[in-house]
Length: 343
Image (cartoon, rainbow, N blue to C red; front, side, top):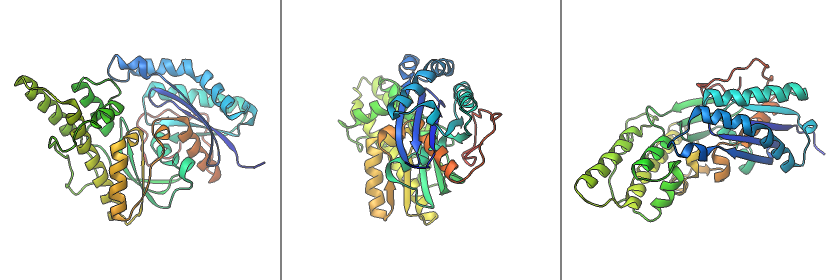
């Protein structure tokens, strides 16, 4: 037996209803109901559709997670929920459900930051985080560099996206190339048959002295290149375009991440978020970190995309740190800043 609390995490920031259960840094359940197929025909996530899907999926997904862990509701010691950032309506569903479960079970509630949770989840696979570490979060809506002295309390923003995040660029370029939504996995697969050196696409803000990112110009450059080829009657070799675009993205991401490590004299880099599942990003990051003497941590792909386990992991850290629980009046904040780890 152990006195370490069981924490149930609820994630509804976008299009996946994620329920995770952890005890300390041990993952007991990670159940996800995705509404991705419902959004695919629109070429992107429709907030109202996502919210309705969360409503329908919440109860069965929670029950599935409890069954996976072999637990009952009465075993749960605390509830953690993504309070932001994310889609407002989607967040509201999760926060309302979390309040109801916490009140009904008589257990504490912890509203947590979605981005900080992407950092905390790595502990379920690789153990406690080094203090400090640099975290690079790359997802559909965020490309961020963070200095993390303590994921439960102190997260400092070093750089972010000034326009399109990496994941958004993947989706938009996939559309240009006639690949399905979401674009990331399809570009990754197509790129395996192409050359990353075939086309010299631009690297936005690569040497501008900041730790910010910009992928809008790259996205436009790909679209203009494809348009020019088609206008001249030439064929477009999708694998080469996909590989060259992908190489431009991961080149910028890894260079900036290592710039942050050097600037702050930190020797541990964590990469999280949905784009961290990209095979070329993982390979190039490993290669460059080894050359720079930086230790790299990347969760397995299933923990990179949005999930309830990451929320439960951060909630568990908050419980262990003795952080005061949230009140039942916590809001769903679609623009919650990364520096606010819990609300």
